[in-house]
Image (cartoon, rainbow, N blue to C red; front, side, top):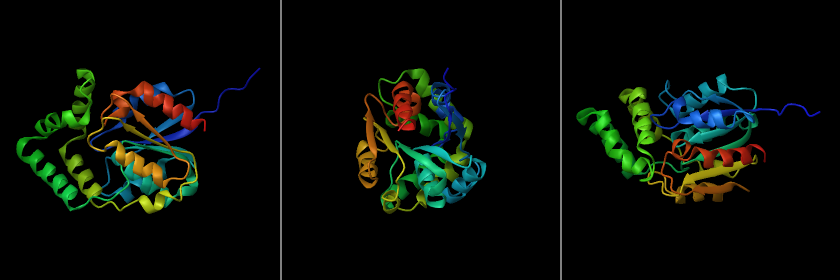
Length: 234
């Protein structure tokens, strides 16, 4: 007779304009090996505050996966409480700080969303958010999720992202199992950003998902879940 498989506490941190819907396929698909908790990134106006809130609600020790902006939050969680993180995954994200051009683009995106309407900006961004082969219902789900999160939260999160530090010096201190994933055709955080993260983390595993844009958890959930299972078992 064998005992029941232990489900690891797993904190999943959403990205910009995302909520728990981002992770629906992961919550369902790896429920036998993980006990997921979705981090709250919708309330605070800085990445350190988001990290502090998530830590206050999280189990004493947990695996941690952050997508896009959630990757920046995961890096901040690691800075604040590395002893609580049992393993860490960075999905479609980057480790460097914004340069002046990137900051200008974020500020312009907020201004454009206020002038033209948030939905128009979202639909104009879809070609950069998802792979051309991604089924239309998934793309529409991305838009619907962002609209539900709302323009004011989007603006608040963008300002938080602009203020983030360069996290690359902190990555070398990660000594737990680390996974770095990117859509092979991600245009927002291209694979070179993932390679840069992996280079800075000792023994990190790097994986690129083919025919996938930026929204890997929704676009290619089966492939991502296989990677997360392997990482959780490392």
